[in-house]
Length: 351
Image (cartoon, rainbow, N blue to C red; front, side, top):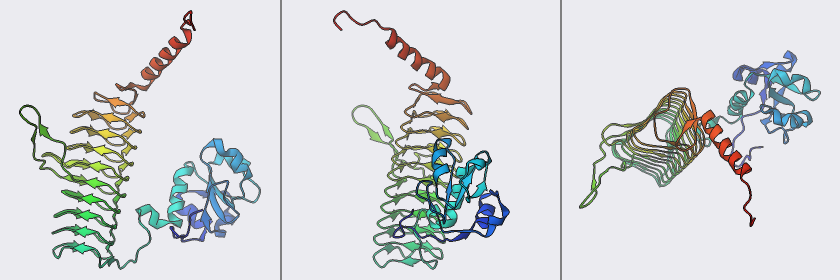
């Protein structure tokens, strides 16, 4: 269960209200008025808790749980413990995510509960020309520069720095120690601690007698509902802008280089690096430690397996893996072939 020192629970809530808001159906309509106090994992839940089952690996835990209510797929309804209230959903994990937001709405925005009226800490610096909407919170040590505009309800965390001329939309969370420059940020964007947005792209005219710096004259444009994980960096464009599309989720410790354009609702997992001027379509997935070379296009719906090295364009809707990346089935056959060669090798005489 969530530690109340860190998380504020809005429960209890009636199961009928939860079912309606998450798009589930109660197996027994008489359970609509039944109240649950909190959410919990199957093995930790009690009779006043709501849990969920998504992965069939946890059927045994489901059958043994003490949870008073559970979100499940209809196929598992007959295996529920006696007396358990069931919320039936074809997508239990998504329904559970929405239920979690009911109990802990502030966590959906990345920030603790703040006074709706907002507050500017006396230890923060806000330039006189900055424009802050209603309910904005600026925490100790934060700096809001000349001409900055911040939308209503946004939070600027401790020691964050928003540089001159940047704009931040409504209901954003700019975490502690984040730096933002040369950037325009949409609504409901979450930047976790240590994120760096808008620093110089890595642009040099290389050669003798020295490497001459190319001024980076673009911006970073972050659209609505983007989330960027801790210590990820997004360089500003060299002339064109670096763009991160609506709803995209980027994990910790990623590098997005100058002029990169990322489409809508992409998922980019930790330690991935995307080189300059690469383009991603919508709903692209890059698993952990993927490397994308510059000036390539990964088309919409493509998926790259962990530690893939992308050296050429990837067609829409395809699954690739390996280094260099190639279609997953081809990659799997090659791995199997190498493994089989090793198994067939005859031992040397001295082994």
